[in-house]
Image 1 (tube, rainbow, N blue to C red):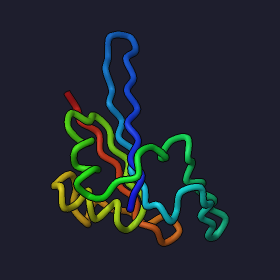
Image 2: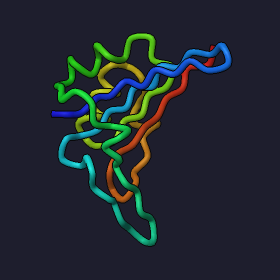
Image 3: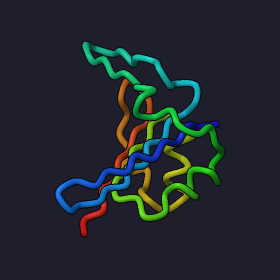
Image 4: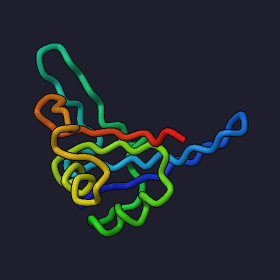
Length: 102
């Protein structure tokens, strides 16, 4: 299972729909490796607990996406948002972001 949270922002005439997705097992954890600390912040990621289909439903009209964790990144890839070549590892955990330029 994963968490998906939608952040909708309208500022200075610009609308952004940010979709944050992370694996349930890493929510709230701090990843540490070689002096790098990355906190998987529940304030940003914890929304609805969903499966892959639930994530894909939330992606419609997203302008920015943020995926963290194995299952989440696999869902982003299977939805066609990005490829494995676009994924980075942070402390061994897959991570990907997208931004729609309009």
